[in-house]
Image 1 (spheres, rainbow, N blue to C red):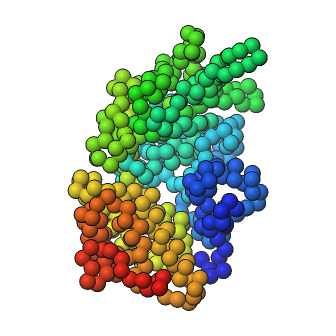
Image 2 (cartoon, rainbow, N blue to C red):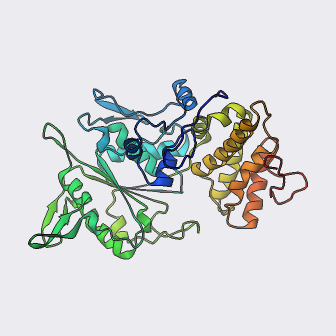
Image 3 (cartoon, one colour):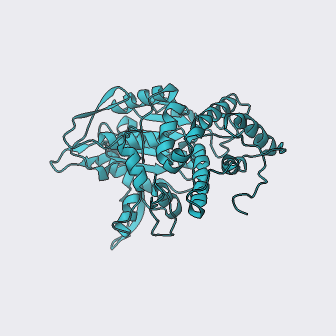
Length: 409
C-alpha cells in the first residue's frame, strides 16, 4: 500500500474503510446492491485491496461463469445451476475462501456433501466459525436460489408462511416469501423450476411459540406444509432447509450464549444432518487478515505470526473451558482493524513516522475491555502477551490496562 492510497468513503455517513460492505450492512442496514442503487458509482473497496487480491496472495472464491457445469468445493464436484442469476442467490461474502486446513475443512466438506444431496441440515458452532458465511458462499458458488430468514426472539414469524390481509371483499390470506419459495422454487426463463435453499439463522433463539411455527416449516421435509385454512401445500422436491445456531439445541453449555433456548427434540430430529463447525486454523485465517487489512500487513508483517500464536493460546484455553470469553475470527478482525486505524492516524500526521511501540497494546484494549470480568481480562492478556513482539502489557503494569497516551496526547 502506498501513502497515496485513497480509502472509499461511505456516502451515508462519511465513514472510511478499505472495505465498506460490512459497515454498510451493520451501520445502515443496507445490502451492497441497495447501497449502490442509491449511490451509483461509489467505491466500496480500496485499490490496495484489489491489487493484493490480484496478486493471488489469497485464493478467493468467485461466482461461477455461466458456462461452468460444476464447481469444486473442498474436493466435491457440485453441479452449477447456470440458468439461475446471481441476484437470486445469497451473496458471496467479501474475500471468502473455503477452508483448506484443520477440523473446519472437514466440517465444510461434510456440509457440502449434505447440501449437494439436498439434506436438511442443522449447523451449529461458536460465534464467528463461518456457518452463515459458508452457506452464502455455497449458494453463490453453485448458483443455488436461496433466501435467508433470521429468528428474532418474540417476533411474529408466521408471515414467513402466510398473513391475513385485506381486499375489496374483506380479509384474505397472503402467502409469505418462504412458503412461495419452498412450494414454487425459482422459475427459470425456459420454464424450469429450481428448488430453493432456505437458510434460517439463529435457530436456537426461537421461543416456544416460534418453534411451533417452525415445526410447520420443517414439515416441508415430508414434502408438505399445512395452510391456515386446512389446505396442504406440496413442496417442490429438492427444497433444502438449513438452520444455523450457536448451540446443539440443548441450551447454552458454555454460559456465553444465554439467549439460546432448549429446542424440542421432535423439531431437531427433522434435520437429517447435524454438523458442528469448529474455529478456523491460522493457515487459513492469516491470509484472510492480510488481505482484509493491507496497511497493517504491509507495515506490521513481523507481528502476524505472533497474532497467530496468541490466537492458538487463547483458543486452547477457551475450548478447554478455562477462559470465559470468545476469540473468533470476528474478534481477531476487530483487533487488527483497530491497530490499522491507529496506523492510519499516525501516518496521516507524519507519513514517515515509525510504527508506535505501543501499537498492539493500544489495539488490545478493544479486546480486553470487551471481556466480561477483571479475572478474564487479566488471564487473556497474560496468555496472549508473550506471543506478541513487544507484549501487550506496559512496563510496571500487572493488569494489562493501558496508561500511555503517546499516540493521542
